[in-house]
Length: 258
Image (tube, rainbow, N blue to C red):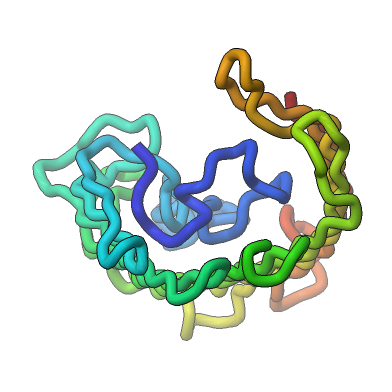
């Protein structure tokens, strides 16, 4: 099931406005090291916060919808991975909805980190999120998340802020819709040990040919075209290491989703 941590990990893929997921739901190691046992390799098997895991959870509302909660216990080994130890990970999020269209959330993750060598250690995460939806500001959607995490002695921090605006609002499910979007996304890997920061500035458009529930069948139907331009940068000590960097190059991406 989807883990109850922040927003991105709980969002279905057809609702994501950008082609690439944020760092909060991406691989923590973006450049592998040739040195066996290096820290950059040891913690490369799973996302900063994995999208799904095997376990049990409960969700609900309190105070007439003013608060939401999600609590779960999971294997902690990551997506599509068999459990490798007897311990379980605890994940929880408490949401606060003070006004229609305005939401806040606080999340926590406590468990064990299983690296590619299948050893266990401390794996903790703390997160926060906010969201401003169309109910508060018509045609505008702003959201952001941050997460601080430790894997044994490795300390990481990531955050993003993104905004989407409906240039062409959708009147009916079969009418077209056009969104413009922008996101700033940063991962600070191994804080306190050199400069190892990954930064993405993403700009793009989403065009929906179809987006809504078909009344006859009750199924969600969606056809959309997404175009993203990612401006990427990664701190590196030398020019040679920068040229060999698999991340520090801009990207133009296009995707059709049906």
